[in-house]
Length: 73
View 1 (cartoon, one colour):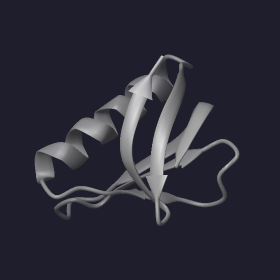
View 2 (cartoon, rainbow, N blue to C red; view 1 turned 90 degrees about the horizontal axis):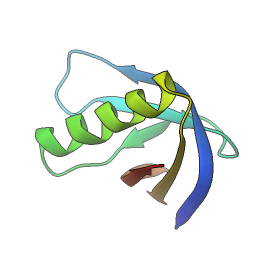
View 3 (spheres, helix red, strand yellow; view 1 turned 30 degrees about the horizontal axis):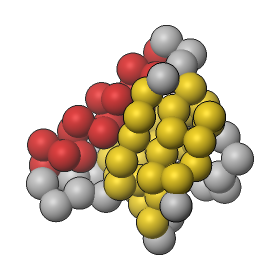
């Protein structure tokens, strides 16, 4: 489900492959970044960090507590 006009409050990643997370306003807890590929996880993580660093709103598509897509506004 799309969660619109949200802010990114935190991001986290470890050295493990495809292990990245974000916290989004209005959604409880950490959301894992879903992805079939390492590049996909990296791209969504980079977009989350860009939004966080620049105080931009995002629309995120969340399925089963995982972020699948993001739009930085």
